[in-house]
Length: 325
Image (spheres, rainbow, N blue to C red):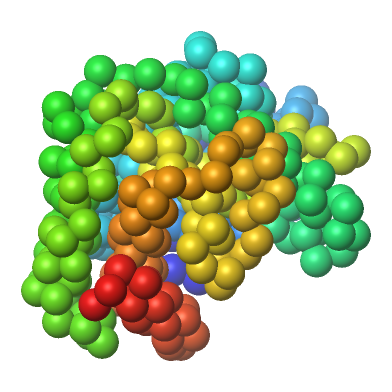
C-alpha cells in the first residue's frame, strides 16, 4: 500500500542502521540483502539479510515533516510498549525486538529491528483458503484476541497514559481527536461534523457499562496475522493498541456491518455470548469511529485514488443510519 507516511531510506542509511543494531560485521555488500515489505499501510518495513545469514525486519516511523492523525502520534513507542506487555503477560506469539533506536542520529525517525517470521500473511493468502480453513483461522483469531484482552490496565486510553478514569471519557476524546483532524484538513464526511457529535452523544450512556480497562489490540485483522501449517505463528503491527473495551476489537466489526466481513467464526473462537442491546449500540459507535478514521486518513496519507474514501463514506452513512440518525 502506498502512503506518504512510509519513510523510505537510502541503502547507505539502512546499512548504518544495521551496523548500529547488529555491528558493522553484519552489514552486507551489494543490494540484494534488503527488500521492502509492501503489505503495510503506515510504517515502511524492510526485510533484512545479515552477513551471518540471519534475517530480520526493520520498521521505520513516518518522516518528521509528515503530519499524521492525532492518535497516530508516537505510534512506534506504542508498538514497542504493546510488544513488551504481550510477551510479559500472554502466550500470544509476537516477534522479538532485537534493537530499538529513538536517537535520530542515523535516521530522521524512530526505528526498530525485530525477528523475521518465516510465514504467510493471512490477509494475502486468505483468498486461496477453503471455507473450513477460513473459519478455523477466524476462530483462532478470536481466541488470540481474547487472550490479548486479558491484560488489565489502570486507566482507559493510551498505553503510556495519560489515561481517563472512565471509558466514556476516553472514547469521547478518541472520537473528538479524529473529528478535529478531519475539520483541520477540511475532509468532507458527507455528514456535518456536529451531526456526528450529536449521534455519539445520544448513545454515550452505553459506554458506562465498561468499568475495567483492558488491552485492546484494535487493528488485529487478517493482514496483521502470520500463519503457517494452519496456525497463527505471529501477530504483527501493534501501534494502535490502547486500554479500553474489548468489544472495540476489529474482529467484532462484522457483527454490525457485513462490509467488514463475517464475524461468526471470530465470535465463536472468542467465546462471546450474544450481544445485549447496549453492547450492540457500543459496537455501532465503534464502527462509527472506525469509519471516521478510514475516511479522514485518506487525506493524511494522500491516497492517489478515491476507492477507500468512497467505501469508508458508505460505511459511515450506514452506521449513522443504524444509530438512528
